[in-house]
Image 1 (cartoon, rainbow, N blue to C red):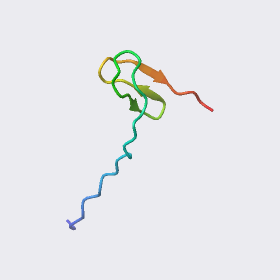
Image 2: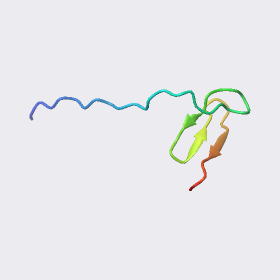
Image 3: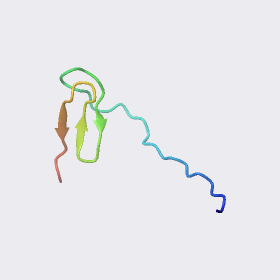
Length: 48
């Protein structure tokens, strides 16, 4: 086996995103929706 250097993991740049209207937590920004991990609220993004 050849020694391979581990790949660096890339992270999204931190931005203050959308806030949850139910509980006030910051929502996760997924490719097709915003989701709250605390209360389970989700909003789907509109396709343009």
